[in-house]
Length: 147
Image 1 (cartoon, rainbow, N blue to C red):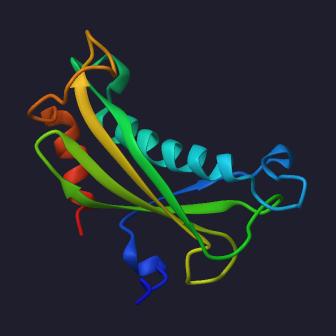
Image 2 (cartoon, one colour; image 1 turned 30 degrees about the vertical axis):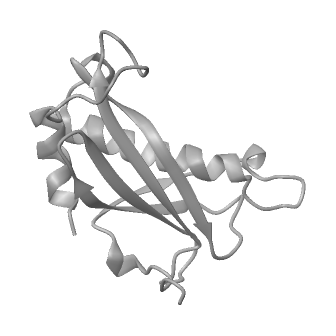
């Protein structure tokens, strides 16, 4: 049984990205790596805006522990891409996001990414074990996105 294709109503926070000529691959559609750049940008731009701090300088930082993408239809340059975001889970040391990519008037996502941040001690970097709990400033920024 397949998972239903996400729609605009499935997301809480929105931002728009401008596409660039170089975002397309040799076949004329968005390069796979660009999808992941968009997911990363949506999440981190939200955190910067909602926390008002440089999240890279916090005592605990979110490192990407998992990403994935489901592709539904082609998108690419020159039209902008709308990115919808929702949080599926806020755990003790991690946050699970879903980011839908939309281009044009369609109510259905062209792609949907899963993006997992695990919080670690910033003094020791990404090789360390998760830190409990997630910083309060992050929790306050992401809990309104829970659905």
